[in-house]
Length: 423
Ligand code: PMP
Image 1: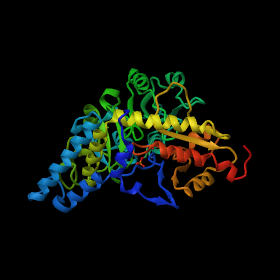
Image 2: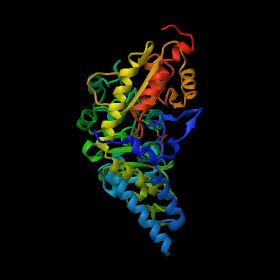
Image 3: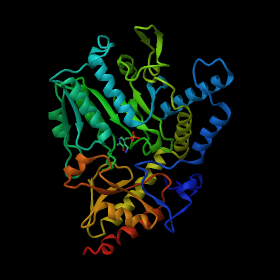
Image 4: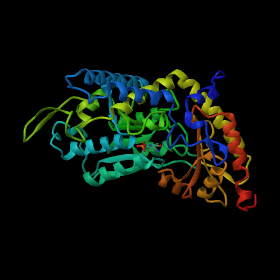
């Protein structure tokens, strides 16, 4: 960790080498989307300029090359999360992955494949459990599934310090629970949630577990099979990769039993005018032409992260986040969200600036070249729980440096003075 050289890595990120509003760009919005190293752009460029073709079943050379590159990318990204290639379904991103799962379960309830996948079917009285800290992407699909099936939605509450209330979880997850969907790391709190504890509560009652790994995949060594979850999602664009591609991991036994969500080309065996047979996973869940170039770009991104070393990346980001916290707590009027003691964290802090709206604070920072996110960060219920409507969030990635953090702290310390709020 001591040898981790973020300054050297920055040379791979052309976008970081610019001035914004007359200041060197300080990019602290990687929680929303990461920047992409030139290796990722090059991988997509090489594919598009040498091998571009639709994959599978093509008789020509480029189609075979494209298929190999695409399937090699699947193997690389699957391995990155500890999985086998057939356990990785390409999606357009985490939102699509979570909707895929929720709609597939809905199809197990009412779809043509329902008899074969009855184990997933939901009825009135069944319960779907999420948490109070979820991103809307891991909340609304379950609200919709509950509305369509008559199931009831319940939520694991969060303590004031941002940790999940596991005692309450033990009371909520019970005989009626069929699904437990929760985030590995909240995009607002940055706390690594106790996956093993929640999985064991769910397993004790035979509930399906769905993990949102968006905010952990770029920042920690991740072994999804070892975490014991049934299904998990992540987004390529948050982990140095392209937009429009992400992954859905599933335990083989689960993916094999789950009916499809989207249907159409590339996911079928035989088709008649009246019915169709479906391929095994992962193809069963990959209807239509897939994001081939982005998948190849994502493989380059995970290779970049692996070369940097996820342990080192994590240690680097945690060290910067600790520096950030130490500075923020010294600034009058700053209230951190999720400042729990003794928890594992990733490198992000969301906070309130007393007397200043988050949007004003964000604009003030932007004028100094500092990019942060403001608003509810697609976690409105979480903000409501903490008595706020918006916060400022600074989120780190492997390419951030101490000088980024120091420039940020320097600017934050001037916010309340600038807006005439007494310290
Ligand atoms: N879950 C979490 C925790 C996130 O941070 C995000 C992105 N902000 C998502 C889900 C949704 O990801 P995407 O928009 O890439 O589908």
